[in-house]
Each structure stands twice: as structure tokens, then as C-alpha cells.
Length: 155
Image 1: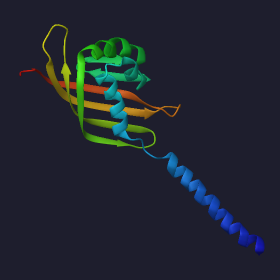
Image 2: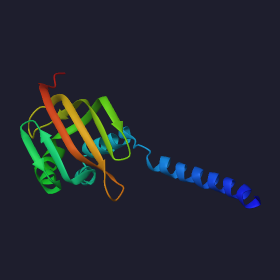
Image 3: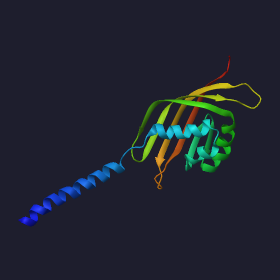
Image 4: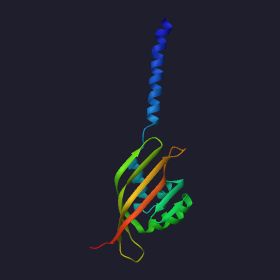
């Protein structure tokens, strides 16, 4: 009987510690932090920081273009875009996360400065989807950007 009296508290303690570990591993990621890191790379014109946020198997859909994979995204989207885009700001309409996937969607504004031309104000819609990688890092796997208007910067 004495052994049973010691056994029940031990089972209770082990059960509680297992529940705590399970709950902590299911903690969702901070979506705002992921978006901020991605935007900081663009606004600081830091292509290495941008590429670091993108998964190897990612897809970028931008207007009528689709870029598949890390290398194509780096060469065909980031390398040119980082030279002409600045002041990117987002306004989330929907965002959520769990322990495997996170997403953020809404509207954006940015400045587009083609070489030798005036600054254009761009605005549109965006969707960003991150997935948790096997390494534990969160990487963008889908980037969808839809420009809805470009207007000259009139001062």
C-alpha cells in the first residue's frame, strides 16, 4: 500500500511534465517578427538577408511571373528588385500560425525607383506563407505579390 501511495504522485508529476513539454513545442511563431525580418532585408537593400528568409523550394508569384526555387528567386527576383524597391510597408488583413505553418496577407505600399526615372508609388496585395523547416528555422515557401497601381511621386 505504501508503494502505491508513492506511485500515484510520481505518475502525476511525470504526466504534468510531459504535458508541459508538448504544449511548449506547439507554440506558434510570431508572424509579425517573420514579416519584419523579410521587409528589413528589402528596405536595407540586403539581398543576403532576403535570401536567408526564403526556403530552397519556395515559389514567388509576382504579377505575371513565377519563380521556382531558391536560385531562380535570387537571380531573377531579388537581385533586380533590391536595386529599385524601398520603403516597403505592409498592412496585414489576415495572419495566423501554428507550430508548422504561418501566413500573413494584406496590402502593401512601396517606392519603385527605376534607374534615371522618378520614384513611383506602388501598392498592391501580398500573401506570405512560411513553413517550419527540419532545421527548426522558419522560411518563406510562398510569396505572392500583386501590384494594383503605380503612381508618380508628385510633390
